[in-house]
Length: 254
Ligand code: 5GP
Image (cartoon, rainbow, N blue to C red; front, side, top):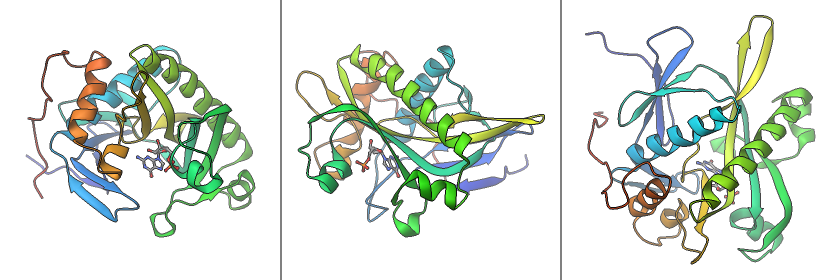
């Protein structure tokens, strides 16, 4: 059997060439990193949980007409996705102050924001993904004005939908990050939600207790990350309420 070709390896995922032209296979690793990979660990089962949670969210978004790169889950750690041209901008939407906005502007964590706030970061690990203005994005040709308008519209639709989805299972969507990619269809291009949406890329707090159910558990040493992600998966109905984390399945062999 021919060995498949790796296209890209990131901190938490690997992309392989897909079975058909225009597709990739996205593999979710157990590696956890924070602070631009200054803090690192391997969390058994994280990749399996994020694969399932991201599948659930991307499928639900597709169901309400938000275009995504997701095609289908293949196995415990892999999903088939459409090849897209990733725009090198992270779009962050915030509903409640936390993380860098709290630090930067001195707003106490947990303060509700008067309206959802959209921020952009330039995807560059060497620079630590710096916050940038729309002006930078246009001036340096990272995206066009049309792309930007589409990205903001997509991010706000994702925010509205996911805020409701999570609130329905007792979780507050504090903030999240998405990435967008271009898909070419004949002479036209459109933007879709790409990468992943999981507790790695969202802040999720229990509505009643405020307990953190996201990657801050790892960033801030607040307990067991897999347990937090398992709780999210259970609430979303992805795994039974009394089940244990589905941590078995294929593992990456280096
Ligand atoms: P902050 O700017 O407060 O660090 O992050 C805001 C939100 O975006 C958080 O939910 C955080 O998890 C997410 N986020 C920001 N940068 C990244 C990133 O490089 N990778 C991932 N997975 N999430 C990010």
